[in-house]
Structures are given as structure tokens and as C-alpha cells.
Length: 394
Image (cartoon, rainbow, N blue to C red; front, side, top):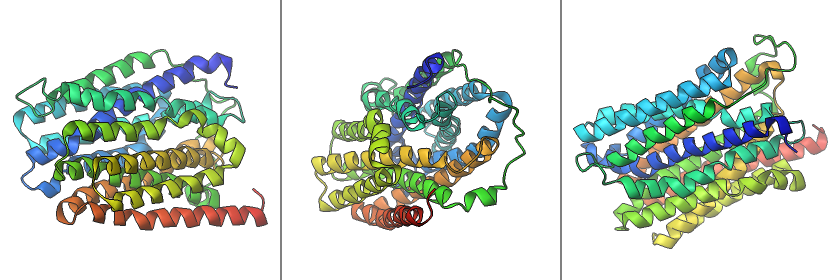
């Protein structure tokens, strides 16, 4: 079980994860629609969301090293403060009708999320050995709050500020990050058990060439990028097929629930069936999502496709994170975690940029076809590591 002395930390981390993901889910729900309203070209609708992921990618490395110097609590607080500024900028941009200011607001949300990514790694630092998968799952389970509140917040607040499209949603984002700042003041992360030379350890290239690191990174990269590709395009595709905004919010809500609800038992599934088997099943769920997405454009087809995407993301993201912890030593923590998340959000940004253009220029089917290649790659990588570990036990 989790260390009793640190159980409060895990609860705080989970709550902060929920608040951060609620802000992210709210932005997911309305960003492309706001971008479409503000941009001169509909193909640019997902550019703000793409910039959010680019900013997250560029933040991972400095955020990881900054927290290595000043501590987790201070680092997370800085990230949440930037999130408050991001919501304020997005609100101002919507009121002014400025597409490029809205892009800047999205980018700052990405910076805030770049800090929040390390909440899941912090769970490992406050947990006894042998329970890492469960601790990661518990923290990510905080995202259930995002599923329940995010889309509902978007529906409830979208018209609160008539002069700003979805302005109430962005005001809500400011509040969510403020609550995160307040909660973080109760976080207590212990220092490493022994002296750590942060410049010590193997070179980053040596760490990254390990089979374990490669498969862990691919699992996180593909799980997150395929989710982003399909989720980012879904509000635009549903609007294009004349579905109501309430239906779109319902689909996004089901998707986010599917992302985080399994977190209560994903750690146990990993312990029972094995990490690599759970990763492979996650890839299968993404393949199923593509099949459903290609079968039609009814509300319930979108609903089931997004549920399958959410499940696939959960198994690949939690499994990939757990596998990554096997690839580095304590003195290599910051650089290994930063590289993984840098690579992950590099691909996520590419997927998000591509999503809007594919949806606008070609259509929903093209978005789904674009996901097939990455899913096959991660399936092959997991099978490769599974066979390799039979010959050379880890």
C-alpha cells in the first residue's frame, strides 16, 4: 500500500491532476471552435491547440530541471500561476476578436500543462517500492474530475460573457488554476534518500538507446498523439455533420471518463497480466477506435470511438510511464523524464496541427486513416520487447 505518511501527498497530487486536466479538457472542448470563429481560414482552427502542445513540449525539459533545483511544490505553483495568466489572455483575446492573442493564451496553457505532467512522476517519489503503477494510476484518476466537470463547465459558462465567444469558459480556467495553487501549498515531497549528483549518471543517448526506454517512449508518444489527433478533430467533425454542441460536450465527457476512470484498476491489471500485455491491449483499443470512426458519423459512432480512444490512451500512458521508471537511475530522473515528455509532446503537437488541416481539407475519414500507422508501430514495438525479454530476461 501507499506510505501512510505520504497518503495526503497522493490525494493532493490527484486533486491537482484533476484541476489541471479539467482546465485542459475545457480548452480541448472549446479551443478549436473558438479558433474557427476567430481565424480567417478554417484550416487554422486547431492552430491554437497545436501551439499549446508545442509549448508543452518545449516546457518539459526546463520544467523538469527547474523542479530539480527548487522542488516540486514551487515548480508546480509556478506552472499553475502561468495557467491563470493563460486563461486571462484567452478571455481577452476572445473579447477583442484577436486570433493571434488567442494562440498566445493557448501556448501559455501548454506551458502550465508542461509543469503538470510531472504530477504523475511525483507520485512515484512518495510511494513505497512495488506500488509505482498503482500510485501513478491514483494520481491520474484525478482526471475523472475533468471528465465530470470540464465539458459541463464549457456548456454552463460558454455564454456568460456575450462579448467574448466562450469567454466564460476561459474565466473558469483561471479559477481552476487558482485552486491548484492553493492546494499545492499543502504538498510535502521528501528529498531523495541519499545525496544525488544531478550531473551524474549515464549519458542521455545511452539511456535513450535502451529497448525499455524506446518502447516506453513510443507507448506514451503514440497513445497521447493519436488521442490528440482524433479528439482535436472531433468537435469540428461533429459540428460539420450538424450535431448540437450539447452532443459534442457529451462525447468529450465520455471520452475523458474513459481516459481516467480505468485508472482505479489499471495498476492492478498491470500487476496481474503484465505491463507489456496491457500496453498491447491499449494499442488494440486505439485500432478499434479507428475502425469505429471509419464506420460512420452518427453521434453514437463518435461516442464509442472516443470511448475507445480514451481507454487506449489510459493503458498506453500509464503503462508507458510505469515502464519508463525501469529505464533510469535516481540520478538520471530529470533528464530521462524530460526527454520522454519532450518526445511525446513533439508528436502530440504534430498530430494536433495535422488534425485541423486534415479535417478541413479532406474530412473525418482522413483523420482516422492517419492514426493507423502510429498504432501499428507501437504494436510492433511492444511485441519486439516482449520477445526480446523472453530471450534476455530484464
